[in-house]
Length: 25
Image (cartoon, rainbow, N blue to C red; front, top):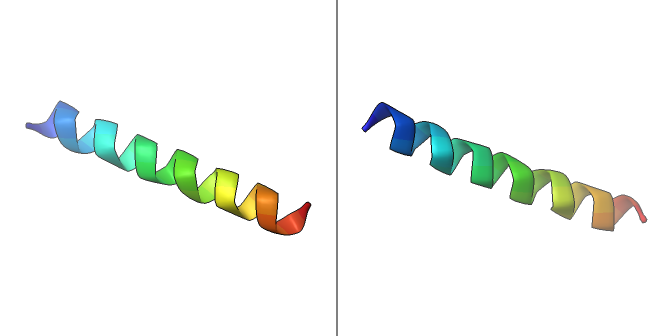
């Protein structure tokens, strides 16, 4: 369960990073 939560957090973080990058660009 912990691994699954970690995996979701990583994906959400990646999405946030991409959104910020496209927003800055």
